[in-house]
Image 1: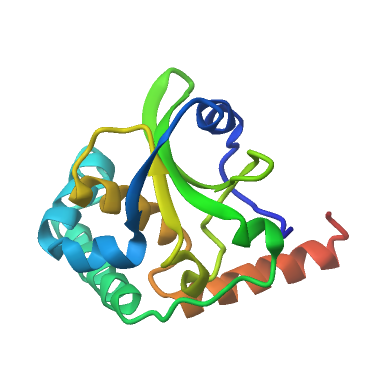
Image 2: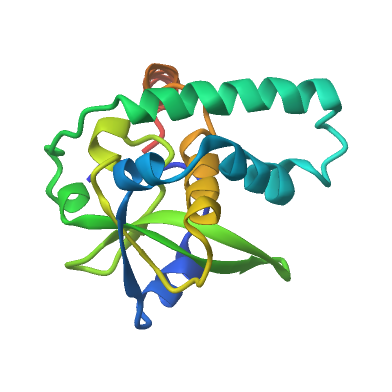
Length: 178
């Protein structure tokens, strides 16, 4: 199983152990079902609007970056993971709380062992056809907004994320971190 760097998903693991329902969707199906602008509007509402860092120019830039990621995901061909733990997993989207602040978390849930992992460094080709499970009652556009936010945490293209992942692994190896 690859090592995942990112959010502590311990509270999400507890949540995932509860009964969840299948969203009957994949990223690939959602992106073909939804229109881009309502999805970006949810990204803006949940992640950009109340953060002073995101000036009007930065929001416009983020809009273009997310549109580029959207277009790449639309054309991404699914492939099977060589990692059995990843292959036996689905994308899980659920409510979480950190330091008393609620948020929506997106993670990979292994259906066999009920372990959860970050998705931010996984190949988009592997993720686009993963089934999505959730316990939330939100629209398709809102669901996709949270997934896109998580997928693009380290960059707005699969190649950029892969390069950053390789760089981080190389740095960890140089520092002898496991």
